[in-house]
Length: 281
Image (tube, rainbow, N blue to C red; front, top):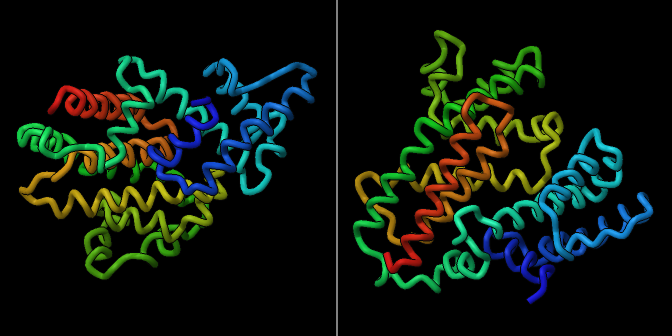
């Protein structure tokens, strides 16, 4: 199986992209290879012996402010988003721990390939408690920092127009004294982000598909909020929720203190889930 096919299958299996988007992104890597080769008068084939550091360099070149930013932004930023997805794929394959290979991940991501009988009750309880710590207060904390930074850039009257306008009466009462987001739960904070998405995405150069990570985070929040004392039924569900939380934190990363440490910790704990499954859980 070639690198192109691996990349396409990974996007569908791991990032749950549609078949159409996966094919577009797969083709876009070849298009970028040809474009960069022509512009620099060199031969570049990003699928042949890919170099992670070189891909990172290309992302800077084709992203906002880069030499070929206009080209990267074609078709709603399809080319630059494809490069970023390809980088995630390569980093995913590399795995510093040596166990996160694509073939193994396919088995983990595909729920039907995970036999529940091989997963112990202790493992499920362990990872249920582990994942529950992230939305409260970690994701909430960094989302508040992000919104406090970006909303005033949208409107001078940001408190009324971008916050209060989208809150329920009970939520407004919680924060009416201090006019501060700190009193809000994750659910209304995510709603504020969604309702202001068009303006926020323009300010942050978010892509259309980046919005999917926000909705996935909302699903995770609802999932965990309704767990109560129950545990997850399948390690596959936990694995995907870890993935969604990590992607969301990367999306709202504006250089907040320690957020990269949290993201790395999240990735390491996700690898523990893989180890648990591969060892027979």
